[in-house]
Amino acid sequence: MKISRRQILDLAAVVVALPAVSRIARAQGYPSRPITMIVPFPPGGGTDVIGRLLAERMRASLGQPVIIENVGGANGSIGVGRAARAASDGYTFTLGAWSTFVANGAIYTPTYDLLKDFEPVSLVASQPYLIVARKTMAAGDLKGLIAWLKENQDRASAGTQGVGGSSHIGGAFFQSATGTRFQFVPYRGGAPAIQDLVAGQIDLMVAALGDCLEQVRAGNTRAYAVTAAGRLAATPDVPTVDEAGLPGFYFSNWFAFWAPARSPKSNIARLNAAIVEALSDSRVRARLADLGQEIFPREQQTPEALGAFHKAEIERWWPIIKAAGIKAQ
Image (cartoon, rainbow, N blue to C red):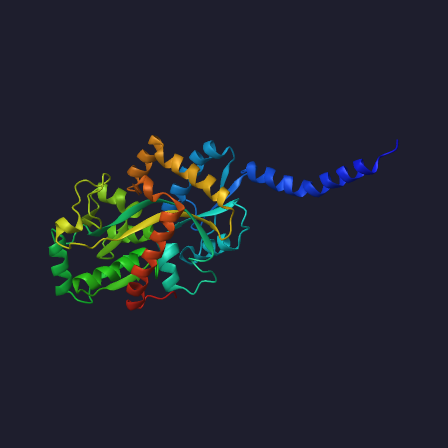
């Protein structure tokens, strides 16, 4: 069979165009395979629970599984570093938090840039902390606790989930706001610290709700205030810091999603849409509320809103953390 010169030129044009067509098809077909969500903490913790809850709901929107990869260590820095080095193709993203995407930048010397090496995807929710003390604490309210601490300067002990962890920073923030001094006792996590608080081995803690909620509900610890402007549905009887006499002492650990820098904008938009849809699901919202999480308003669930919020949080908290002299050990 004889092929004309015109046919040869047409075939050559088709061959040249194939890579571009393939790239367009891949972009239009995103996601065409499972997506990995890096959770920078071990399984079973509060961040992991939130990640798995959202991953399951996002699967329905994306049409592909969202696989959790737990990468713990160095207060989340190792997992975040893994995410920073991942391929910028939209198939890896990470669930970060105030502790990993704000505090760690002031405490550690990370190998990545928290602002330049990631693409913001969406804010998720925030969780205020509770100021709690051992059940046998004589103080009946927050003002009484502060007075007791001033009478016992440097004698009281406060648990933390590790040096540089959010409860450590919250405790240092509390000292600065109240003019009190007490010793920090680091633990391997929030749960063992709360166990010692229940046992009376330590005096107080600025504790994550996920770590102390069950013990507060059971009456095994004294809860003096929630570090937010409004009371929480999960602890309706616990007053706010404004109500308890420490106005403006707001402190929370918020959660958000990021992808590696230079990930395709179209894929970021697809991930964002799946997250927004998950956060609008009534069952997801109910479960997050039960965990003490407050979902960010819809207008704050955009990549642009997260980018601006993230930058503002770094500008606010880095000077406070550095002034407190908190460093990783």
